Image (tube, rainbow, N blue to C red; front, side, top):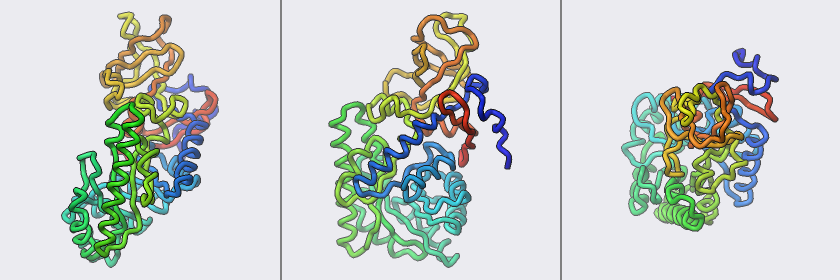
Length: 370
């Protein structure tokens, strides 16, 4: 299928429509290589969370750099990667409802599928369907290590694991957690380290208890960008699933887990009004960047990284309110915005523009969107 954006390749970014998402190719490559080297140094498998990009080309780059597979959150993401021939996909979300069960069975025929659940009820229907289809699907049990979102309580892990292991059509392959609470402690590196280490230990202890109960487990998987320097360092952890690192974003910069120069994604926007002096209006609002909150705790939706400086202090759907910029911005001027959250950004766009030294080198479709 012909890429409708191919005519842009070779042009300077000034020729782009706005708003557009720019991905700096050298930074992207560096981020992928650095995380692969980090996982290798720890002796753990790397299975990046693909929702941060939703770009097949990015996922393939991660696999080529040494990732054992990719992680997804939605049925659409799962289907996109299975159709693209990615060899192993972990669906870290319960397959509740007939459409998700159908997506899981279809994907399992194309790729090595692992499904994450936190209860017998969440997997029972999938187990029945898999058994009826004459197949066996690997599953992982989610353990709550402090986030308080999903996951079985550690003290209930053994009983839940036994119940899942007794089901037909599925095989209990391991345990996993999302230590999202590491991001929640903010910019204090010592607190982040302690929180991540605690989550890793809790998961390993749950895995050890399940094994002591007679159930073999292969994988003990942790997952977050803020926790990737801590949780996977615990002996017994076998896999890490960071996601945001691949693009970086303003929230990771704010808490100190990503240096500014390691952020590959920006939103290119144009000034559309200076009538009020301040705020200056740009053409990137919530539809361009998403409405994800700021870990600066000042309400911003993004930070200007081009020469003028400033922040997108507020936004409507198509309008961004730029405050704090240096004098001189005029209607038609371009600014580049580092958005709060890379994953939310990706879900807002149909494609991303790959740039190197100010020129467009490729345009990649964003797939598996909601």
